[in-house]
Length: 495
Image (cartoon, rainbow, N blue to C red; front, top):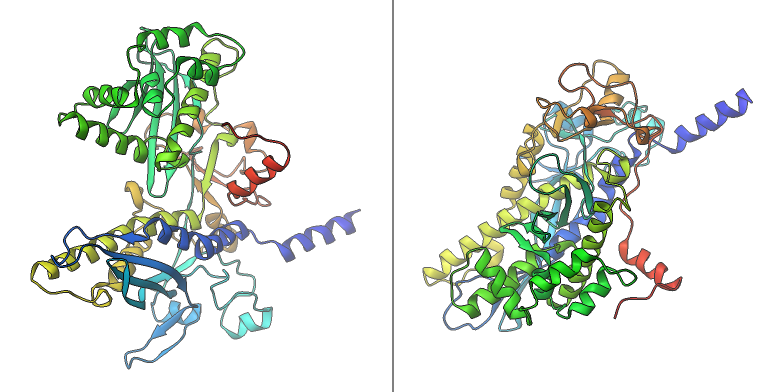
């Protein structure tokens, strides 16, 4: 039995890596996520254009990266391997190219391919020169054949991106409210592109359900549902519960029976949040806010409004059932309600933010030239060094999107085990100076996922953890494929 067990373990480590999940996450970022980010920012429309042109658009079409290379002082380009990057204090990165086209009045004016920047390459990923090299080939390239990879080389320094543990986005969680006027509070973080918008549902002493998101503070949910196009009280009741009548719903419906149309509901919300323009402008502005900032993960188009209304009804139903103790509250520390952000996700966040900066810079330069009476070519306005420098700076300092610090760290090389431990570190975003006793405790769902022993003593205890040795993390599943399979099994869409 021992012999077979040893063979099985040996086979597992021949095929799997300690940092395999991180490398997969990075590969997904480079192959799929890069194009998704470009898709989100596909059309750039300048506000200032030459007076003789009616319509001008800049389109970002396709993005791709080549394998790491270096441009020498004489202008020659050649491949660079990790050992050379370490010794010469260079960044092991790949030039990234993008197809850009400019359209005047619907007709393509110019189309070109240009370098948009350089993206740091993770060692042993598909884009690394060491990918799938044998033991002897790795030795020939100056690498340790037992090295797992999964880190970056920035200015000659080996850097690892620390995995972040956070609450699952797009998931409605209800907990007991220890302070405030509501006994229970429901929270949801709606994530779409670079947006991560907190939504809060609570029931105050007047019996009315209120929703808070971005600038929209404590607005009755029933009014928001009506503003989204679900106007009939009968339909709202049906979508909250078609089997039993909840008194809480009746109270909310009676309170707002006077609101009969979408425009009336939108005007009610606009007045509540202090929009002071004329009625038409108020209503249009509120529509824009609801489309962009209310549950954006469900969509940001006009046709997605009704699905947002259905989801708000579902949230009310769940809130009522929890407040009646038919369902339990959600455990924030249960690992079902957590998600891990690996290197690919962290780099996607960084690139999203910095691409917006690059687009802003491009627009500023274009509009400045137009004001001077010139009509510039777009190719001359894209500064590839801007994106590269901002990414390198974040990787070198560890200062990340949304003010997070210490995301990128220098690998601890005291011994091989410490290096492996550093590559498998998981950090909670909670403050080390606050108590947060429950978050620091060992939870039963950590079994097989997180190491129950390895955590520092002192203020970081329980907040800085490590993955279990045989833990692997799956990528996010394709939602469209899941929905397709469910429909094949008989799931019917709501008409």
